[in-house]
Picture 1 (cartoon, rainbow over the protein chains, first blue to last red):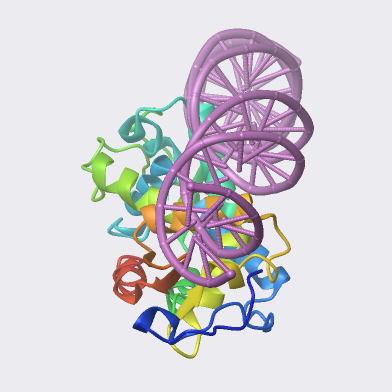
Picture 2: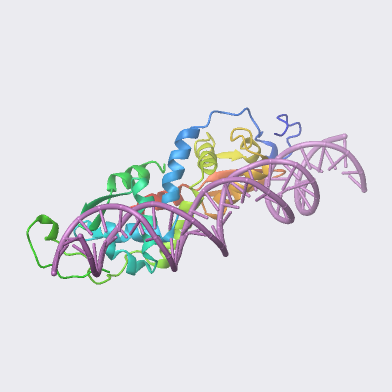
Length: 117
Length: 117
DNA sequence: AAAGGATATTGACAAGTATCGATATGCTAA
DNA sequence: TTAGCATATCGATACTTGTCAATATCCTTT
């Protein structure tokens, strides 16, 4: 933390004094951790593409078996990424027989978008 | 990839057949990587709080020296996080004398928000 | 009941990252 | 020019994460 007093005033450089008292941070530590975890779920290219496929599906849902080939990743890897998206609340899943269908949770993305301001 | 033929129709479970041909992914590999890198910059609680402080500053800018104490992190750590925010295009910086002032790049957040749909 | 397939989990490993102490750089004032 | 401070970089370390092969689980069909 620098000094707070500025003596000379010869240029614009000194017109503003830095290093005031620490103000309250608008975003709490808890909220920051929560937000960060959602962004972390979105911080992988494979997951973004999975979400993209799911979101743009005609019926709004996609079978997990259709998510392996397009991404070029192994089945366990895709399953792992889908789990992360699910736990972040970005997708929901429904098991029907042997298949699992995924849908995007648009409200989750909407509320996230609104928090970017 | 599962079989595509479904013979019996005894319940709703079989009304939809999964595992069609791989369709094009709306989000390209390059775009996904770019987007993911921005989300990665936002996926840390300390960086979100830094951005929060900067964004809500009365003058729209904050001296780096005012960003160490509130976060409770060391000066090198804060400098590291600011660099990541800067390289992601989320903040811009201006050196004035010994001090460095940071401002949020709101258009960057806006365009990011618009891409969440 | 047995076989086969879809999905999830486990274990292991390589790569990436957050953190801090020490140090370098660069600006200002004396 | 020297001293002192603000900021950035470096080096090291502990932790996290993306990936896949192997395996487990669960459902359906025969």
